Length: 108
Ligand SMILES: [Ca+2]
Ligand SMILES: [Ca+2]
Image (cartoon, rainbow, N blue to C red):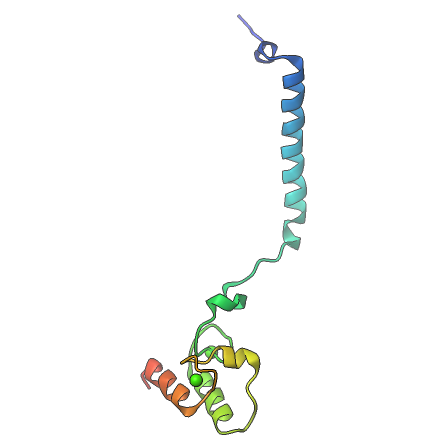
């Protein structure tokens, strides 16, 4: 015995459900086509996930960060706002103490 499942629902309800399904399928089709245009925020670009002491913003603390802190501490150049934001001890100034703290962290 063959029964028509949609015959149990009012015609208006079937029309609304069909339209809803078409909208969902259309949204996925458009979404898939434009997915390459969406740019996500990497954890390193988010200010709150910044690694303290990562002066050169490469995602890790290494000797390059120590050298850059020492260059700034000795007055060879001015720190950028990004570098000040990565201050290891958070006092807002890059000094020799910050370089020593990074060296302790690197165990050098
Ligand atoms: Ca670094
Ligand atoms: Ca500091």
